[in-house]
Length: 578
Image 1 (cartoon, rainbow, N blue to C red):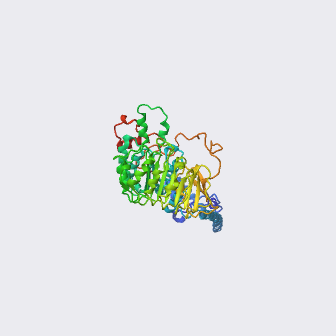
Image 2 (image 1 turned 120 degrees about the vertical axis):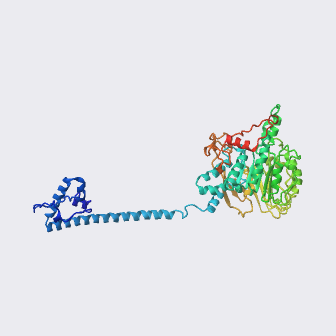
Image 3 (image 1 turned 90 degrees about the vertical axis):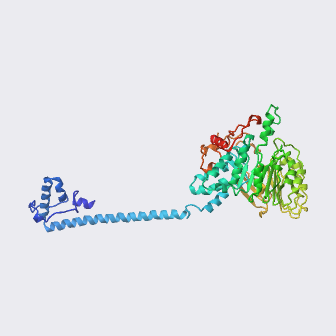
């Protein structure tokens, strides 16, 4: 800018194209006293042809003034211009030095910030998989039953697994494994929807399914749909190693036993109580699977053993290691016959989940069916009793007679109300569910291999698999304490047992910890996070977005419904309700 002010606002330093001054015809001699000051304007001779005669005359006058300067004046003027240019360059150098210093300062800030950040922008898939594995609850810990409501720990865990798919494509690819690893179908319409998703997916999503829980109502008009869709689903899941046919609706009978009988009502509730009949063809197919290691079945109280019943089949499960039977006091009478027909030579973990309510449940439990059933499986190493009916059933179960049929037993989980066994040669650990504190004998001479006993507080009974998920033989020391953050509850494990972590009571709870006022929930909390549209290609919508809604299939009495719902009709019904 300084150089431009010295030369004048219209000075042009380049672009001259002119002849020697002596040859110009427009040259006019100027007086010797003429001087060129800072406002002297050098003409632009190239623009003369475009601006007419007036511009050329002006140019001739300017060159006359330049010719009249002496050598001393030209030298002085040149020196002034060089000085101005030097000042300008010196100022630019100072400015460049300040910019360079500022650049170094900002670069040091960026370097220090980058040094504090992890070297990896995105953790590898193996690391991310370990993080997710420690984030989500293990299979079998949470109950997916609809009766626990939309804010149950299982529902919250499902929403968490879906949310990681929306972070980025990389998280989605890793997170799909955790969404499909443990699948629970709580409504019959979800079964054809899941089959459609697996069959239409470009990737092999079915290979991710390892644990399948079926706890849905299957009306009689949907039996064909249930059998066809389940068969197609199993064909798409080659790595399935655990399947559970588990009803969550036995309490229905308890709600209507005392009501006046009306015409057709008995047939309706009898059909509702037998909510899921395992197709014989499906059970036969499962018996041939090499990877099937875990099976859970619900034995209905009014079970009829005939040629159409899966429980009448003679089957062999050569690779089955874990078996769970959900039963009431009435359905327990079917255990001896089931043990005679089903062979499980590799069975080492046996669980009886005892229901204390519902049609067919009484306060009278008999130990004889358990004697005969356990006597057919001498390879069992872990025997577990759980469920809402264990406190009542425990008073009538002779544990000593049961464990005598299991010579390889090392871990026993019993109701706190049951008489404690007195001897066993290989038993090492005893866990007890109790509503009150128990006193174990200090010395147990009848158990030469005994190592540890634990007491499980009744408030953690909602996690029925807790004794199996936290096995006692992990080198736990006396005085040691471990705290686990489970969905919905924090629990602490000591050498003597597992109980809730003491803390503030939940909203609406009394001094005893029970909630007497129902908490307020959003009207449809699951719908807030998911789209209500049915996505035919997006794998994260294998579950309905409206899990809490009633099924669109009409559940009427048998004589009113004759038409069977096929696969396509069931899928269309799911789309309409989603």
